[in-house]
Image (cartoon, rainbow, N blue to C red; front, side, top):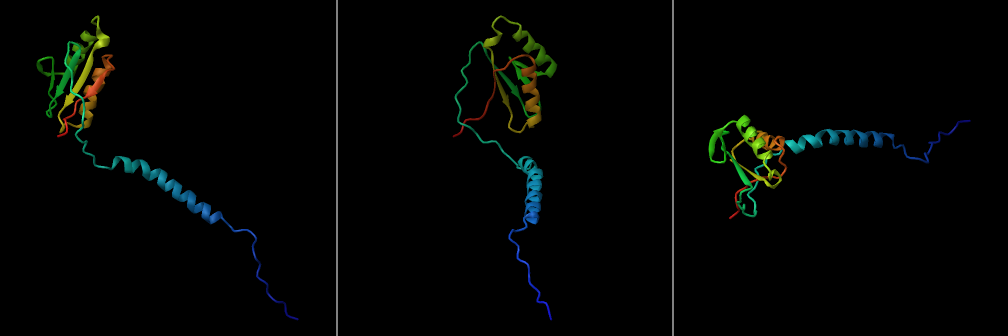
Length: 136
């Protein structure tokens, strides 16, 4: 007598290969997502913003594309001189009223703008804004 071959039917679907694929794709996306964020070439747009109201407590720091810093009518001051002048302002009686506007050239590297920003923060001032060109 011959035995007849019966194929076994599974009541459950084997999802192990599916789970392996899903976890593999998850790992790939977790690795590539942060890289995509930094690979985008961005040119910041012009913005609609309120005009700066100048008063005795408003200070504007200008930085040219050649990294030349202008502050309070003085040209070509170093970061150390800027920091010492900011410390003088911080030690004044009304130091909490000061507002700083950082006006940097659009061709200046982002890192250079941040260095000036950090210098102002290091002096103890928190009210710092970046100046943009007005949209037309």
